[in-house]
Image 1 (tube, rainbow, N blue to C red):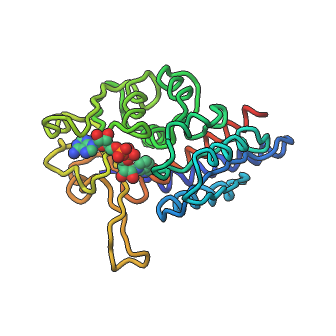
Image 2 (image 1 turned 90 degrees about the vertical axis):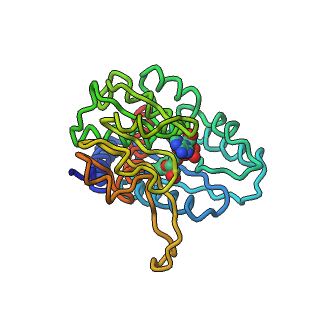
Length: 291
Ligand code: NAD
């Protein structure tokens, strides 16, 4: 079994990005600038946003965190987005999800200028992604492609089973891996909460991407020997023995599934750190386009 080490791989990517940033600034182009909007003070969202901001600083990016109160109106948030859309100093920005219930998430994502949409969630960028045109790929699927590529996991002609059909992970993952590209050319089955006989399907998979958000859902009896397993899930589980009061659980029962796997990602330290690195890659791309 080979561990697909997202932490080490993302550190390497961040070093590569830092070198590119140095080269840009040496040639007189200013460093990439990523902004993040955080509404409210949800613990997990705050952790993710802070990790993104910290990683940016380390690679020589400029970063700006815009924190807004939980009760901000939809118009108030749209106004903040417009400020970032028109601010020439900002190359790319993200709106940290989830948003409070009184705000229409779709409306917010549609308001982001597609040229600054480094999360790749705007319909224009989703459309380009689906057509395999150059664009910002959504960071989590992009990170998974990069991890598979760097570890030289063969995907061409393989059967990939994706569990989950969300717009940010499952759905783009299934599109990307079916395309003619590195870490693509696979035969993809996308499954979801209404799928019948899931186990029969996962048992046929050469590669499984588990992105459903149910801790330790994928167990050893659901996979064949030699499988590659990508665990996207991150769920906080109360754990009084931990300093912060919780532990992170993936969607895969790692202990048993890893025994049957050729390649597998751990949680934490797998897909999560790759997501941040790819967000930075997208922001670097936005800065290069600006020139
Ligand atoms: P989501 O809640 O939007 O979607 C879950 C999907 O799982 C749905 O499409 C649903 O149909 C499917 N599903 C639910 N129960 C199922 C079942 N019993 N069998 C088959 N399919 C089932 O989730 P999401 O936003 O895609 O996130 C999934 C998980 O990945 C969460 O734990 C989330 O925290 C994590 N996540 C991690 C990263 C990262 O960077 N590592 C990024 C995004 C999401």
